[in-house]
Amino acid sequence: MSRKVFINLPVTDLPAAKSFYVKLGFTINEQFTDDNASCVVISEHIHVMLLTHEFFAGFTPHAISDAHKATEVLVALSVDSREAVDEIVGRAREAGGQANGEPQDHGFMYAHSFMDLDGHIWEPVYMEEGAVE
Image (cartoon, rainbow, N blue to C red):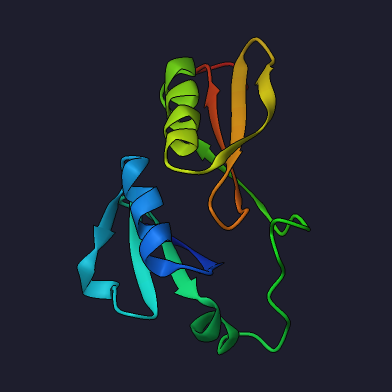
């Protein structure tokens, strides 16, 4: 069975969050989008559900953390090249996000991270094929 990943993220401004992810080059699946949620398609098997705080709160008894103040998760996303790492971080900055630290060059692996509008940290990473066996 092929598995899919649905990452659920609370957002304070759903239209702004949708716009941010579209500016990164991703698409919105309108079939799973309404006033409470939006489905961002990262790839065939990876989707991000952007949920308003009110809607997100219905899925957990815990308080929603403020990702600008505390790190809740680091989401690493593989990309095809070192240039793609820099490109997506650049797009994120242009769309209102911010770079998170400096690029990390480990020779066989290159990564950099950015924070989206709500402080969620994404880390695009390129790893040379066959580097880890």
